[in-house]
Image 1 (tube, rainbow, N blue to C red):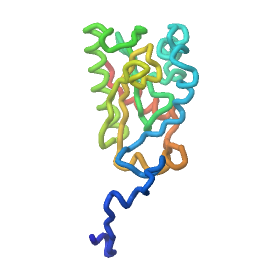
Image 2 (cartoon, rainbow, N blue to C red; image 1 turned 60 degrees about the vertical axis):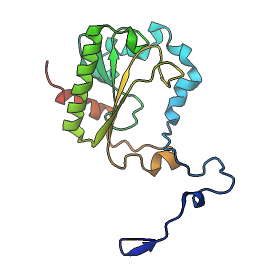
Image 3 (cartoon, one colour; image 1 turned 45 degrees about the vertical axis):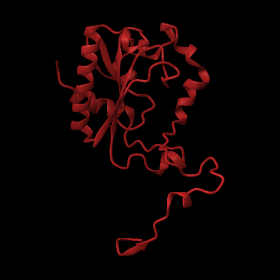
Image 4 (cartoon, rainbow, N blue to C red; image 1 turned 120 degrees about the vertical axis):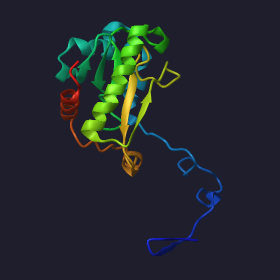
Length: 193
């Protein structure tokens, strides 16, 4: 037994949290990230993005920044808001070249990729004060890439408690600002260079 806020709480061993059948949906040791919006990519298949003309990351730089949600354009890569963010301010670092794998980019592209990632973190700290970040690249369809044909790195700001019950129970993510508002804030805070 332990005391919390003046009440007595009965601690239960782990085996009491699940039933004898360990049915699906019964709590277990895994934290799951439910992303039903990604079904558009899954149903369409990876083939929908194999062609450079169909690739959203190749098309984005050809449109105005506000329309494509680009927050910064570099020499070899650009930074864009994720259209289906895990959290507000979820950014993607993308090379202009249509290449699928991290090993496909040049030394110059790799350097700019790293610099843009660091700048993205600094800017997000300034405008949104996150407690941490998730950084990552999903390589290939088996690696979970939504658009496997065009390399991109995720920069996801995180706050304590941002993975509350809403996305799990209601399949709803509370995003507190429109993408246009977030894009404007991040783009305005991006250092001139």
